[in-house]
Length: 149
Image (tube, rainbow, N blue to C red):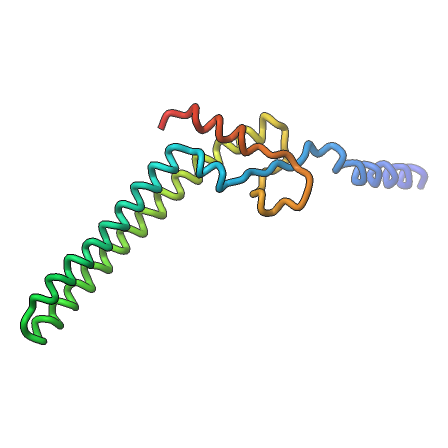
């Protein structure tokens, strides 16, 4: 019985002191990283250009639409352009999501390396931090600048 009580006491002490061995929580300002990451900035410009291409496509088609003379031709034109635009828009969205995921994955991989180096238990976004933690934003930015893309 003494052994069980001793074991229970040791186990309880272990559970109560376990958080003391945690190295800590890191946080990152993802928006600041994006704003200072050249690859992310160039991808954002590329995505903006592709978005502008979609808008230009609609403006060009609107001019064509105005030159059509019969209601039947206008309706056929509208239907055809709606289908074409939908396909272009879906392709753009798929491309954008892929590029955003690519940037996120690169940042996440660098954050994981920094987390291990700093002996942190986890890294969260700065928006979730009320107080405490270790800011690794600038370290991640510097590491990203050193990566050749």
